Length: 203
Image (tube, rainbow, N blue to C red; front, side, top):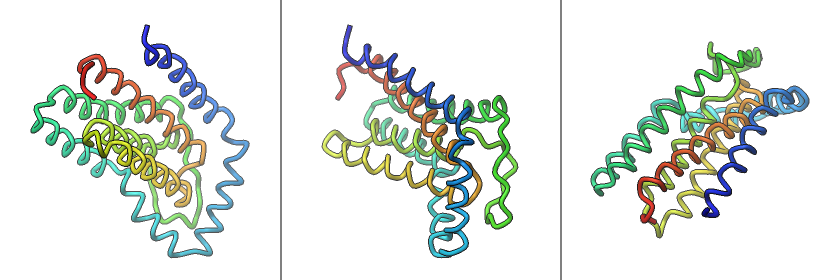
């Protein structure tokens, strides 16, 4: 059995435990982080408006558009299976997150000073999950090997920034965001496992 096959169950279990811990234990730290975010909104308008712009990197149009562009590039390289994996992973992850929101049913934070108003449920954060899935998976599957490592680093930074903006804007608790990252990373792991199975010799 390969080392990757051995690491997969442990990694999946860790992400599932992290996800559930975020839902069960988030209330222990969420209020303090939310209060700090509210202070930033009040004292730093420039930071707030930057967050309003950067949060769009995890939006539906951005992440779906990224997946489509990445898939087109992969098809042009005659990597149709990777193109399908990228598109399906991003779409299925989005649908799964919507289902998880309904299942857990957590209400969003309510802050009078929030500039973003949404009606969907809160846990896990869709922007955090969708942003990590789309950006990281595109870096792993689309970036040429010489540029893959910096692309992965950049993708992780983008995902972290998107998650931070959701808390800063007052539309998510910190535990929503961390839970979203866990869900997104699980989607990436599943997609890369499928890629290894379909294209075992490709680097």
